[in-house]
Length: 565
Ligand code: COA
Ligand code: THG
Image (cartoon, rainbow, N blue to C red; front, side):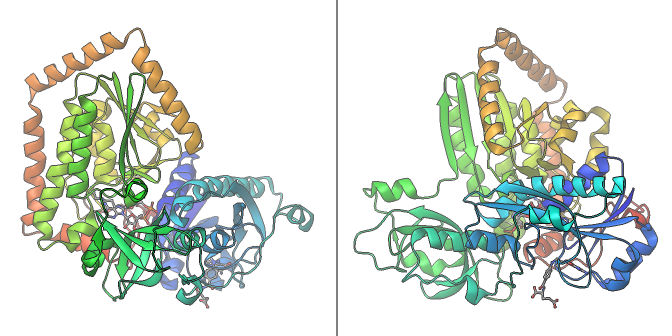
């Protein structure tokens, strides 16, 4: 079928549907929702039989939906309507929720229903639910809708809808409706309100008197003598605030200024340096402080988890992770599993921290060196087998970091962006020039240039990953542990390790790792310090969430092939 995807941004859900529908052989193109005129033009050029809108904030113009059926992917149960569906579902403590595929009409979200799918809610941020449960349900609902259309069944009838959970119109959620009353909200309610607004738009509040949007909340214990709403302590960049029955850690914040962007809370509000650091003897508080890096062992397997907000790994994150990686390497284990984070395995260098630095070029350089040290440490770890267990999405340098492990196990629905080109044509580092050809051979450069997202299942088919399994996160974690245990105790473990050592020695003799790294860094130096400012411009637009003014040609296929790579 000729399908046009219409989306406000090419976000994780749009990427997942792009991959799923492409895999099914549909003739796909995508246009970002830039203006009604651009949408009309895209419909005229691509001549789609169907428009699918995975993520849209504005009305599709009537002349478009009258001409072509337009299916809206709505993150709510049938009958639910409005622009803040998931936010409301969290606030109203829905135990189950769903995704509905409905046809666009004049009235927002009130058109015929073509498909729906449900899921159990989890105590997590809106963005976390969106990237996992919502995305999976959206795929099921869209496929159900396509089947109904192909079979000529028509939309769901009143009787079918009556048998399903139903929602209602929910208005947009402005800041006053999101506000936290610290004098009456308990810790659960505070966390719920933070989660409903995470990652966008945050809850407008104030940090030690400085107006700021709050994100990334974690529960903390009751603190003797604390007044509800009082800012109590800082630990790293996280800030602790008292509730009526406990406390919450705030990990990230965005100052309430027009050009401010999201940062670790203490960096967003350096005024909070006045807060006392955590007392060393306060063990309950210490234990509750958010720690993105953790390590555990089961038998001969070590598991290193690193759950950085948005998968973004700044220089200090990378250095702390390197220390943890070296400590894990020194343990008498046979297999080391790199678990990454749940939402994102990794998204590479921390573009927001780079944007906030005095010298963006210098900070980019430091960050790249620090993440390359991680990749190099992995490649050189020849006394055990390493596994990247990619349960969440991964992009750019973060995706290539996974390729530095011996084995890549991935969830079939995880979205991998194995390319750097979107960030101002970066050449890329993380030793990709060594690791990608090991797997992809001569097509390595094509993968980089194509700039396409790939599902975990597609990555395995192209031998970019070794196994895809785990429909849910829980299943994935359990199977990773089982497979890692089996790998460590397998009879051929010594041979596998020996083969790895031999391959590394051969490769090093053929061309030293340092040569790959130097070549990549020479290219990166040009992007950071050279005449072409594309990287700095692209990063600035990414961090400041500048609206798109065109659709990249590798997605807008109806606009013809781009001239260059
Ligand atoms: N540094 C800082 N923030 C990053 C980041 C990075 N490397 N990668 C992703 N993020 C942030 C985004 O700004 C966004 O922030 P917000 O939601 O808190 O405002 C969040 O992570 C998720 O991104 P979004 O695009 O909304 O999520 P998604 O899951 O729908 O889409 C990608 C994923 C891969 C399309 C997108 O995150 C992306 O392009 N990231 C850039 C990766 C990159 O270029 N890294 C450079 C490494 S060399
Ligand atoms: N029909 C048409 N276009 C659509 C939808 C539709 N575009 C996408 C849309 N569904 C997704 N759902 C909504 C529902 C409500 C709002 C936006 C998207 C909404 N928006 C404004 C706000 O956020 O304040 C106000 C509305 C306005 O623009 O007047 O309420 O079913 N054709």
